[in-house]
Length: 352
Image (cartoon, rainbow, N blue to C red; front, side, top):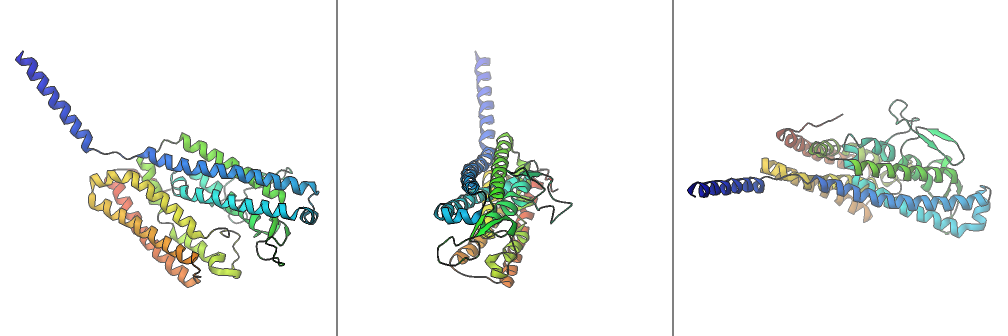
């Protein structure tokens, strides 16, 4: 009887010690990281489907006029104007949802292909060796080899008329009696073909994300790689119409300020750290606090610039350089802290 009692006491003590160990240990919520990306890309997919439907309606209307854009405009000006405006609105929606996910998609090696295809890759005409090897098949059967990414090399230049070959006709969309910059009817074949491709690529990305089994290494790799990319994005901001004005030769970053993209990328990475930072905090509370502050400071810096821009402040190229250098300095410091955390946690970070 005594032995039974002793065994019972020992068993209870062992169970209690196990319970304490479980309570004191923490794990990263990687499921929440995946859910965050899936939620955004699912919303992006809804937008690209609507974008495709709008492009199809536009294409059909232009086809009824035998692709004579002047005839189509003369007969259907109001309808065509609404279709272009609707397409632009839903394009911005799709792009914004993607940017909130891009830091993770572009930073995780197994997913990075989709970022190059959808948002970041250069066309072969600009980068003959580094361009992604893929084909865009247009509705008329034409095949374009390695034409770059869907958002900024195909759909945006067509919708906002920044590439002359993508324009069907310059028109007075806003009805003020003048034809101003970006008042265009997109070339219907390119408009529809790029819309079909974007929707297909988004669907494939969604499938890849659903199959993805995120690891702690994935999360830290994405943060270490993507946080210190401020120079590139601020450089594109400087060259865009938001800074260079009419002197800008950029075909991209017309619809949205590049600051929106930067904020979206950093927000996604900050959300990621919110879910994995608990393991850093348990291991090194001071390091965790530094990382947390680093994200807050960098995001606040970028968001403040965007707020000023929205309020009508027009920055010049020297200011863009200064802000870009400061953002890069902050980002490199933050990335170094993240790399230190990964090292202390004995994580293998893939930087290629």
